[in-house]
Image (cartoon, rainbow, N blue to C red; front, side):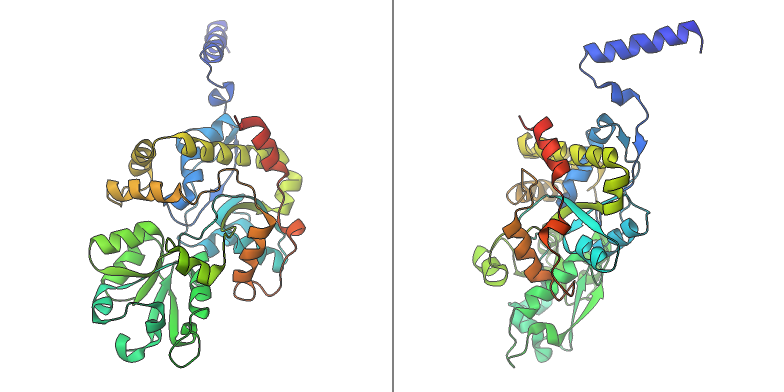
Length: 354
């Protein structure tokens, strides 16, 4: 390297330090692979961490996200080594552990499942199908109701099955016994399938629910914002969305795990203190341009009411999650001490909590 170029780089680094810009922003971070199922604000921690350069500032480079259109595919990517970190439903690391690939939850981002909403075709709603119980009415539907989750085995599927199992049909059986489940994919295919009447109902994140209702081809018949309805089915807060990795990753690359947790925690704190409109503008431009801007803003406002700001996985909320997962997603409960490691979170909290 020439003396002139060396001097230039030293001057640039010194200037960055004076300006308060982390030196790591100018360095090539160690690569990590990061996955979540769909690009909606339920996974805002990943999206914000990328756009605000928190990954780079922690000394890692996340590159392009792996977004396979279903949480089951995310955990498959993690267990196969295609992704180092996953952000998704808490049943996924438990399922991986049960299958012999020990996975560990690092933090939780929310306390209520935003994708347990059930949205039915508007024409069926107008015919009188206005409750989850009525999904079991083959005469009203015209056939056995087809319900779409993002993928069979995904978080939307697990929570959907739980809602339908906890709801009795007219014959005394659960509604779940009267429906057929299919994989619907991500935003475009889920909404398109409902609009085209390929699906009779979908498990919907709020953005899908609002878009379907705005375009008048769908209507919610189970809304997680209805506290009475939520508590009737779930009984209280649930550790829903978690960041996770294989246990071997924690053991072999603790510095990368710490960087990942730091970046996500910083993103959560940025979301907490930032105006909804500013967050929505950032998300709409970069990851959610398939939605109208007002839908993105509504999404941000919604999720800020259910996000878990300290990221901590409370034992009680973990136990509430197990009620959903056993036996739908996993055969037996996994002890909290085996499933959760909050060591990295505590270090992030100590460093970045103001």
